[in-house]
Length: 406
Image 1: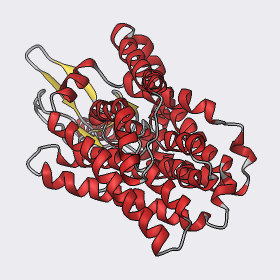
Image 2: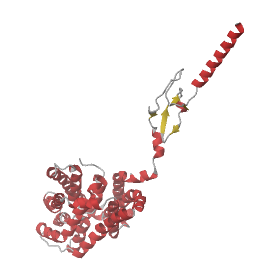
Image 3: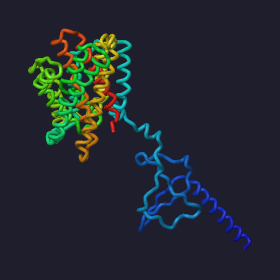
Image 4: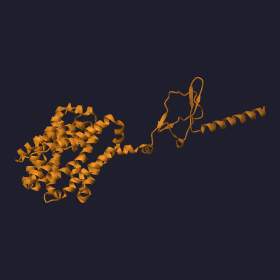
């Protein structure tokens, strides 16, 4: 009896040791039975968790001492939150390229400072490169759009008409107001006041399309339609406005205007649409590279006009004209945004529409105004406001396109 009792005690002690070894295991061992699947879970240390099943950490249920008789096979496992370090490693180079537009305000500011401090850094980018640069930005817009977007844009005649009124009614009124104030209140020469008025009489800037694309991509086709319409009709409207506000009828090159629309807007956008439609794999391959390239192109377009016209900006009247031109554009942005909110307050997309019409009202084709000033006015001071306005358009585009107005 004594020997039998000792053997039983040794056997029981051996079973307890085995049980303790099992309790120290750090993973769950699946076990199948003939009737059902069950899982035996053991306690684990958080330092022994392993990465598996995609990118999730499996946290096994802790069992103390006794094994559960049955675990429901449909019960979902518990997952721990993903570590930020793991997410950082999963960030791809393509994602970095796509987010390049987020640094546009900093790039615009840096380009502006560099152009004013060291003009030769941008003077090589002459006006002959402006059309290809803007064409590239329009190509990026077309590649990220579809034919359906433009069809929907044409189905909004009220918005198109509102943009046209802002471009050729509200902006010329502001131009006449600020031009008169510049001559009467600030004592600037008449030629500078004429230059301010002339800047407000030209058509919309294609840069507004890119600004709209950055903030509200779905509104980009509508912006392109509005800008193209104002540019096409500028051959008639701009001479009439210049006659009413300035007292001088300025002939506009019709062929040059049409060629400008085709080169900068229609052809690049059509190329992007066709590439997106018929060669989607190529479109997907090049699309991530468009944001950083667009940032570079925009920085050149910002710095070049300021660097080339640095003498006008730093002239005796440069600072005063700069302040007046900035006030002119900001007033147009604010009023375009406000009036659109009042007129389309019931529209479900009123905020994006406000931003779009604000860009259309605030941005002018200042290069056209500069060309008209140099060609039809003998006084070189007439070209100072348009020259300053070119830089202002690009700077405000970079800032406002990355900052929600509302």
